[in-house]
Image (tube, rainbow, N blue to C red; front, side):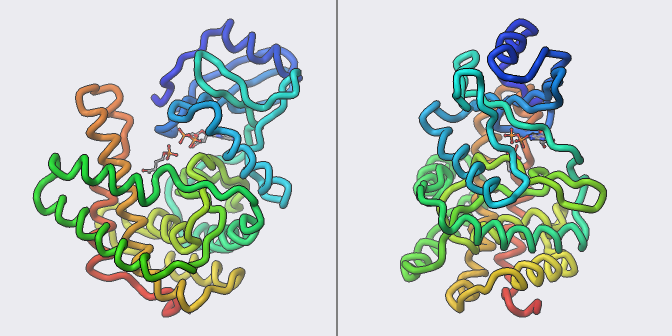
Length: 320
Ligand SMILES: Nc1ncnc2c1ncn2[C@@H]1O[C@H](COP(=O)(O)OP(=O)(O)O)[C@@H](O)[C@H]1O
Ligand SMILES: N[C@@H](CCOP(=O)(O)O)C(=O)O
């Protein structure tokens, strides 16, 4: 279970007392998620989620809270941090930056289908447009600098063919992107996997977990979404019907440039590589700790997706 920092009854009572949330009724660690510690919290005023950030320093967190506040202001159902009795939205609990947000109704998907992909495509395009005027341009903490450093560190621990795939794909992307200084960017979610959405019935009702948000290529974010929502995880291959539905809905809401169309195959590959690499890093970091290892996502899923996109990366516009 992904509760890295445990809170006792008295810890939670003290936290709740500093908000306008009434009395503590119950709380429970959340098993989904691998990065942060999350608790469901019930008080006499409703249901909330407490998040303790495990990887960020306190000064890194406000950017993410500001992104969410910006999108909420624009009408998206996203979890903005609540303000405590001191007027603060960010606190330190057990040494960890901590926030409380509203708990949205609805539940996560067990898998995607054509209709959920269609909805995601349309909402993602709107999210990208809404992010354009967010003033702070933060680089991704898992962007180009990170993938160079991490792949150099990890390559020697991989099978030779894996290391070749990793390093050659990074080199290919470097060469491509060096010629694309004006490829459109916006404020992206950066990790919009289907387990970071909630649905009420068949309706997409909320988007959560903006802690990979950054200023980056729009097509990269679309590729992150396509690789997760539209892939067969056992083979890495794209499900054509889901892919077509997602892309068609996206293109209906947002016009893409010729440069973005040309960048698409590269973005599909590098987006797969980014999650292969973060899963490899987490897996290698946890391999001597069976409890932590059991919580990690399987890196091979994204290796298979990368291999499938290297074999064949579909054009963006052939779906229309
Ligand atoms: N605001 C929320 N409303 C409802 N459920 C939430 C909310 N935030 C998180 N959750 C639940 O907690 C799980 C883990 O949250 P997530 O933010 O993905 O964790 P992590 O930061 O570790 O990746 C989600 O899959 C969802 O089930
Ligand atoms: N989506 C990433 C992992 C990021 O952590 P999450 O807990 O937000 O899913 C992956 O699947 O590798």
